[in-house]
Image (cartoon, rainbow, N blue to C red; front, top):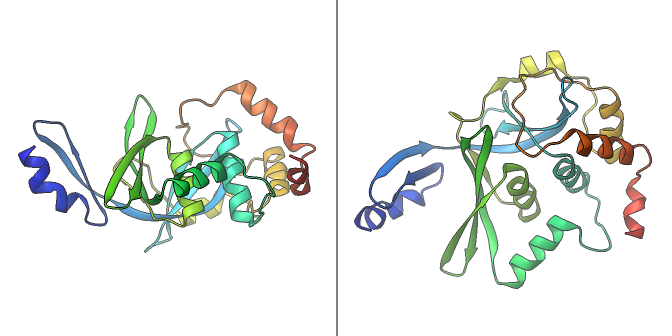
Length: 221
């Protein structure tokens, strides 16, 4: 309790995160603020990848393998499409706001058993609530709250913009149709480090869905 009291102000400083147990400090982490650059497709696995760029130096890019539904959530949000009824992440946003809360920030802090670990920091009045999360879910909520995203660059492997451009096509994925085309013609060949939970049958269902889905389809859901 003494350590938590003394170090609590430091834990709230931007770009720093403290990992601790009840009895001692484990590590003080310098965090990098990132933005969502785009969604890509792994040419080896067909899995979606969210590309996060260092806000101060966008030549530094951090790829994270995510699930197909989570990739769709990012694409829909980034395209500016507003569904007439709330989709899953919009629903979570509405619930948080209804409870007088907001997402202050999200942090990708660690990797355990080949899965990235993220925290969603929710501000509710004077109360700060930290929720354990997958990075893909945390990123989706951060985008909907326009909240900052931080990551531990000792955990997430960095690649250069030059390396990225050498492997990707000119077209960025900005709409569901773009994602469909890129799924048919994968554009990245990066080291395979996928997030836990991606299954072959999920990818196959996603590809089948992309064959027919259009943005206006959401109007009937």
